Length: 308
Image (cartoon, rainbow, N blue to C red; front, side, top):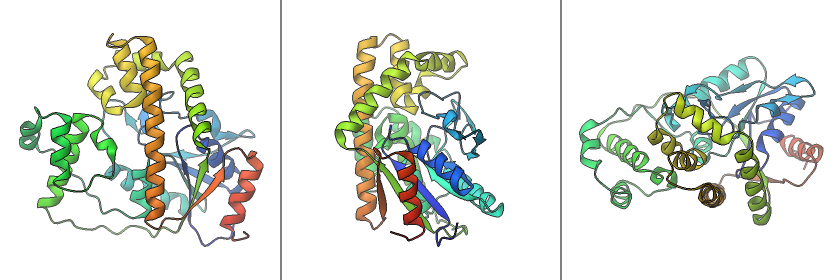
């Protein structure tokens, strides 16, 4: 495929069918998928993160994927590690004359590549953590705002996340950052789009299916394997609310209602992030999710090859 781009990005809000589009595209252009999902990196977190591994087989052809199942559940993975791992995988794919396709809905991860964030490893600051351990989330938000404008609201999902965000901000404030060279990225970005009503319906339908087809057992298995309730809360959404259900903090009906609402709110935040990207000059080519797969691929390839 002749193109001036060396990376195709497939993104959009949750439950939008991004993986299916990306894998079908990869089958067409001899591509490989790099996941841009902050939770699909964890082993054993499959249903709740929507890995949809079956989507990686197209007409009996297995589509290679990267940055999925690379970290044990219970560990912490962050945007610094993602960016480092992305560039390593990106160069490997290019060295084999394959085409890299970045697919996922974690806006911060995608932004870290498109805008080449200058990120470094930030060590644990035990003294700072102790000084913050008794603060509530509102207090932590005020402290974090004293360092920077908050763009990534997921930093405030839990007190652990907020404390880590403050820890990182404090490190950046007090240390000189040495920039490492990275490969040049020439990306083209596509977003799979459904209207608000369709997004809501798809989210609710998918949640019902997952709850009825093993998602609760998946979380119980994580607990049985030694992953703590605190860690599950850290991972958010499905893992947080099912953890609450399994510890008898909420009923099944409350689990469904609260989780459904939380995922809708998450989807709304994703769309807000994409609009912010566009306001900052990132061009996103939106593809109607209702189109047949062949139409989606034809439209994407025509845009990539500058035919429309």
